[in-house]
Length: 210
Length: 210
DNA sequence: GCGGTAATTATACACTTGAATAATTAATAC
DNA sequence: GTATTAATTATTCAAGTGTATAATTACCGC
Image (cartoon, rainbow over all chains, first blue to last red; front, side, top):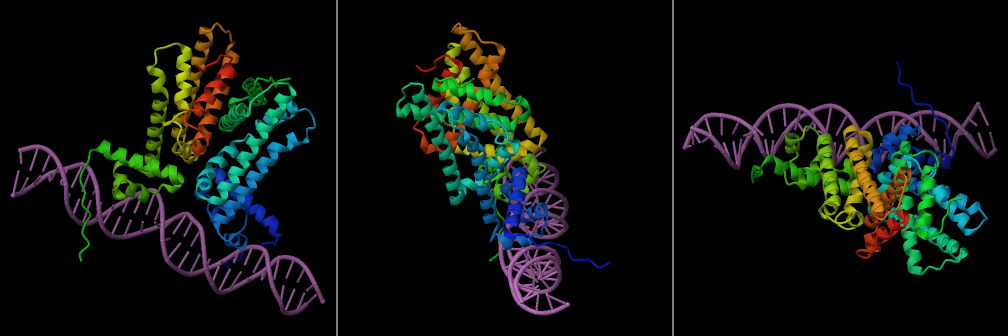
């Protein structure tokens, strides 16, 4: 009964890295960064643990890479629809709010990832930078759209007021995103988006619903 | 140079438990549940690790107790001011929004605790129950205050609409609470509360600012 | 076919973890 | 004072952790 060595196939570096990153994200969502052990990640990606060190010089680096990947993907998912749309600013604002409040952006896994990474984000300078960049990006984009939509409608608003609108709308969207991810069954499809549109409209004084 | 045994004094059970719970909360906020090791907790509470097992049958139980303690305290801090106030519903709504968006409820540590506990909350039935109870409590309370304030002002709103208002305002408050805790230096004292009051007012169609 | 080499597996190591148990000792009653 | 006892410390244990290094082997060019 000789224990035979495990068979394997060689894969491209990028593909293997991606598999490791995806396995990492799964485990971070399930158990947090400390619960995502190198052995667990390797098993999830169907390789042995030594391979992780071959592609990433430490667990720390793998975690950072996974966080970057996740944030980029979320950002893309959120903004892609609003970029496509060539309509009015009001339409683009509508689309941004909608895509921020529907799957796949709204997803229990995203909440778990957000929570799982938070500690690392607060303590690791690199991850903190990634986080703030993503956050400010969204907020600036939101503020610009609000400004343009209001101008379009002939509504005047001071910079301070625009800033306040952006803060409030950003918070509203974050909060709805959290509620939707935390209690997925509590909302009918499209309900979250509808509430978001109506509330953003009320806050900035410009109805957004069709 | 004989290593001498550590001196100690006996304390009341409740006092020791509380010290252990507070040490646990500190460490969960700093490093998450898995990072809060029994040895770390014991050190923080200035006892040796064996004592934890004397008061809690497992780490799991200590974590649950700490979560309960934290949630109860947050709930008390949030509602105490609104309960004191004997004024109009509108005033009570004002006070609730304000106390939800000022220290000590708004605090970086609260965010870290929220994130640190999330995983456990999702997987442990008892903690999940505690969480949902606290969440629904706040939301119901908010909805009732909104309903009463609108009635007071002679504004009609269907149950569905009230429900939507409560969801939106709850999300707004959660989101502002998160922003305030995550970027404490980004907001002047009282700014968060002001934005919250103005936005809740806009959402429900009843100005709340003085 | 056949080396060569980098991708992959396997093994080892020092350290941490939660839990269990044994050994002490501070406070209390008498 | 002395006995009692429960609070507290000390020690032990098996399992799990990230990292380091050695041993294989699948694939590519020839």
